[in-house]
Each structure stands twice: as structure tokens, then as C-alpha cells.
Image (tube, rainbow, N blue to C red; front, side, top):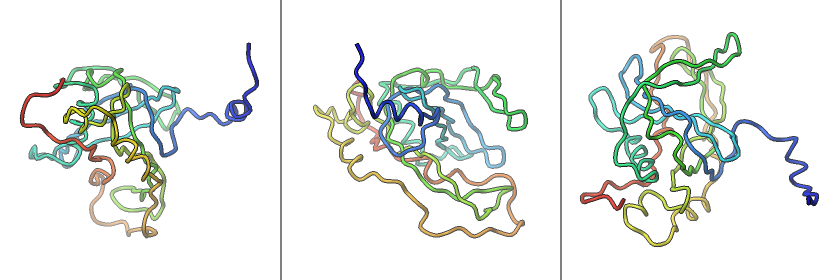
Length: 223
């Protein structure tokens, strides 16, 4: 009934509940939370993605500033919607999971969410990216690694958003993206900043509002 798979046997000891590596993943969002930054009023969406292997990662996409001017993340949200064949999303009250770093316990609370974006199949290309850590609005001189969204794609067909909008007959863009994908380290080593200046909020990380290749059409949607 079973034949030994040596690689599977090795990987059983190395399984993590978190996604950590650059790659192409299929799964679903289990959290799509409306975000508004406290100091500057920047709007965004906070995502928790769960892969088909039940591993998770979190990232934020910032879409509009306080003046409702579009940021690059606005294109990414539209690309995600295209890959899910959605024509719009609405805000509703829902339950989200938090983590208390003091008690080391997870808990749930009510928040504004986008229910249409949750539990719908989606594919993501994620890139392991090095970033400078911040504390109280200043750089600490330390670095870390996180996964950032490079491009979404339709899980069932592997079409990208642009291919869906252009009514492509074969998925080709994803292979091109994967061929050039690699971890992205910082180009220069960070230096800690003195504890003065702007405290609290820093601008959304540059890698989070990734452009997913979405081109807004002028005519009817192809779905």
C-alpha cells in the first residue's frame, strides 16, 4: 500500500507552520482585514494567506493615502480580484485572529474585513526579501526577512491578472516570473538612527504594494 519515499521521510521533521521561502504557492486568504494607519490615514488590506499545505504568511497591501489618491497597492488589489473573478468587494464586520506577544496566546476579535476575498482559491508568487527593522519610527540597524507579494495568479489555470483581462488562451507570464525570481537581500547594510525625529508610524514597506501586472480595462470585464 505504501512505498518508502526518502524525501518525504526527511521533510517530515522539517515541516514549519509558516511559509518562509521564495516560491509559487496555491491556497486561500483566511484573513482580509481593512487597515487604516493611525497617524497618516493610509488605507490598505492586511492579508493572512494559507497554502494548500496549511502553511501561512502575513502581509499588508497599502492602496490609498488619506486624500484617496491611489498607491501602487491599488493595482495589486485589483489584480487579486481579477484572479478571483471578482467585480468588487465590500466591507463587513468579521472575526480576525490576533496574537498577544505578552501572553504568547492567540485570540479573536471583531474587525472590518473583506469577506469576498476570504476562502477563495488564489495563487501567489512570494519573494523572500530582507528589510530594515524599525522601532519607534527609527531604524534599529537590524535586519530581518519576510515574504512579499510579487504577483497573484488564478490558482486553477495559472493565468495572471493581465492574461485574464487580455483573454489569453495559454498561461505564459507566470513561467517568465518564476524564471527570474530569487531572494532579494538589501543592497546596503543598515545603520541605526539616533532616537529623534518621527516616532510611531513609518510609511508602508515598499515591497508590500507590489504591482501584480494588472492593467485596468476600459471596457467590460472578461468574467
